[in-house]
Length: 307
Image (cartoon, rainbow, N blue to C red; front, side, top):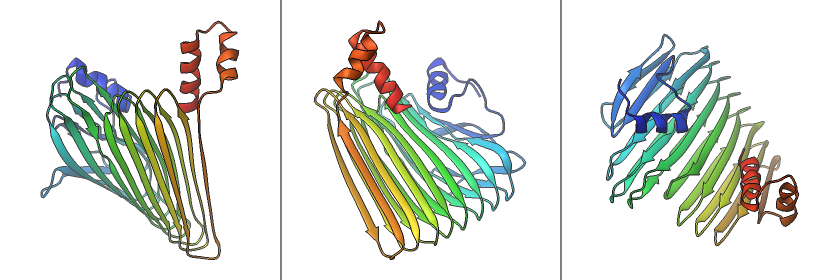
């Protein structure tokens, strides 16, 4: 597998990769797989009907990871990829995904990824998905991820969704169905600038007794960018659900938070929190007394907020 400097840079940004990862992996570049490896417990096979792969993780697998990053460096490419994850009962694994687009041309580049997770009983996954855009071309960098999570009894999923730089347009859709005792935690970190637009949509169905969901978004809208955060939790049993949108607005940015809670059981406990505001002047002044310029102080506050 040969990678040029731009590919290497993108893989470092989205998957913290300095080379070929150990264990199972599938690395996709410019609409084709350029490297794939299965392991004894994690099997990766290409789909035959659509573009994408199936990842099957054996029951009881522990302390293993699988990397499936995507990079695009050719202007004008558009693709839709379908990846399905089958996580066996009692497994405990980490999945590192993400997409980086470097567009130096005049045509839009777009990657739409549909990831479906079937999490077995008592299984646990940690999923990290980072999106990043670069390049000086006038063509847009467009990313539209769809994440579907189907969780069996007493399973748990921790998901880190990150988009900090360079993505011009994105619609981020997450759907989850939880059975008895299942637990879902999502931490979204998002920053937009210039004329960028970002829409995040979450629909979580708590169908089983003692199922729980905690969805938290931290976002910063700069320049003339626009963000919309929609989060709906449906309680269909005795359950606990929490969503939180905490946003910083700067310059001429715009942010819309749309919470929705639906309780269909008397023992469903659902909570939503939302806060949108600018950086407090006293925060900047305090850091400036330590020797930082105003712009440096502002950046330090943003970095801490999105950490």
